[in-house]
Amino acid sequence: MRSAGCAKALPIVCLLWIVLAASACDRSLDSQDTTASERADPTPMLLIAHRGASGLAPEHTLASFELAVEIGVDFLEQDLQQTRDGALVVLHDDTLNRTARGPEADCSGRVHDKTLAQLERCDFGAWFREKHPAVGDRFDGQRILTLDTLIERFGHSVRYYIETKHPEEAEDLEDSLLSTLSEHGLLEADSASSLVFQSFSKESLVVLAEKAPRVPRVQLLDRKEVEPPYDVQLSEIAKYADGIGPNYRDVDATLVEAAHRHGLKIHVYTVNDPEEMRRLEALDVDGIFSDFPDRYRELNAEASAP
Ligand code: G3P
Ligand code: CA
Image (cartoon, rainbow, N blue to C red; front, top):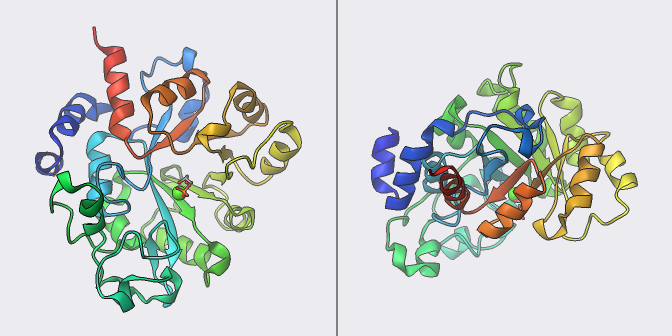
């Protein structure tokens, strides 16, 4: 199945996959308990595919997640929203305007105002061709992805890094999320390491901490939401979360040290520049979200070349 998928992928991605497949999707969050310099692992930071390999394929589509798996990542990241009729869909924006094409009544406006049946009439791949004409029509026709469909596709073979998006506007986002994960056996004791929950909403993380305490939680932080001195803020976060997710522009050695001092992992978004990847690795951050996971794999391939 991987070879067939690879044949459709970009040649450089195929090459990277062949070289690096052995390292894909096989490390746990707890494997980061040593410093980067102490680790023998040549890929010490967790690599989190941000909305899939969303720099190479339209975000939050099966094509994007399949490409991320072929590249070899530690987690697939997805933003979760709820439709008007309660379906869980993976979409980032609160409106459809940027990434959906199709009948205007169904494919523009707010996600929360649409039913799943309406979203099923939209094309979530065509916008990527408009933005990157060189890709041609290979992604046209990508459909709305529900959390259920995503998990049906990849099952327990990958790990999911799930963000509750706009939870305050949803009917029962956390309960519905947990119910879906439970149906797929992902909340069993031996599967909880396949998941991370993340949110900009403290309230959502607190609910998830109460209802699914085994699943690690990461408090996302907006640009400049975290500023020195860090101790008061981080000690508060450490009461309900296992890590923080800051913007890469806010990350320096002081923040990394402070997070680790409070027992918090630090997973940084959204890191696409190889030089920035190197900088963060040297700072000993625990993970990065990237639209271009191939770039980080390529860096490591170069570093391990004779
Ligand atoms: O979840 C990490 C990062 O994705 C947060 O920013 O806006 O891309 O969801 P956003
Ligand atoms: Ca996100």
